[in-house]
Amino acid sequence: MNLASKIAGPADDRTVKEQLEDLGVDVVQKNKKTITGAKWVEKHANKKQRPPRVTVGKGYLYFNVVAARLIKHPMSIGVGTYEGRRVLLVKIDPNGYKITTQKGKGGVSVTNGSLAKYLLLLGIKKGRHELIKINDGWMGVPEE
Image (cartoon, rainbow, N blue to C red):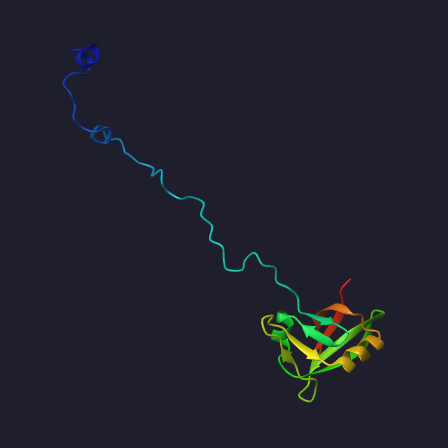
């Protein structure tokens, strides 16, 4: 018999939890395998919302997916001046230019070489234009 068994007395076959409960101590066990701080990410939460844009090329006008959702119909296209800059004007018109859906891209285009050349001749810059909603339609402001 060793010194510890002489001090403790007879052997106690209870677990530590049972002994503490007998003494009136609340036992709270923390589960070590618990996941904490979980944050669920919504689908496409990291994607930035793109503004509606139109791209003017030598023989076409391409409207991105966001712009395509806004303009789903034939359209009239014009040119104006806003704050000293030439801007593209677009409005829905049943008798206007027909749009073509771009497979795989999701956007739409107006493929008309003479229209695009005429817009360039009137001072519209080749490249991207951000579409801004105005009274009857949209105004395409050139991106810097």
